[in-house]
Length: 198
Image (cartoon, rainbow, N blue to C red; front, side, top):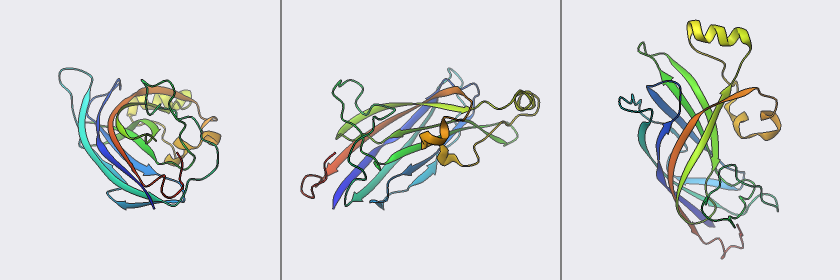
């Protein structure tokens, strides 16, 4: 079977309106993929930056996928280019693994609220890739925004998987939240031997 190794880290987050941030993450892949080793989801520690607005997590990622084939025949462009410095960047095949991210804020009383949702495809080319995943959050109604200012909290997605579904996501009213920075190393093995082209 063709193998995909992803080794790297969730470096941190910047541009969020609050401090004391942590990140929940998960991997999502098509039906032909199987996670052999590593954790498919996790959470970073809380970081409270004192000097600037960058929260550093340096949370390790180490996963090993196998696949018998790729879903579909045509690729779709990645929302976060896997190789931003290379203009002829390949397309990301349907079903290719994605990294779902949720950035949360924890207040002094230990209450948590979501500050942003985002996702990026795992790069489809081998090598070391610095990625910047832009996040967003639901805007909510005028009443929900007023309640958020007075009581905290805010609107959340009932199903966080909506983040990756373009057909459902277009109906949401959202606002920009911040950016999550990642450093991912990708190793592809046996893709040519098993007739899997990416």
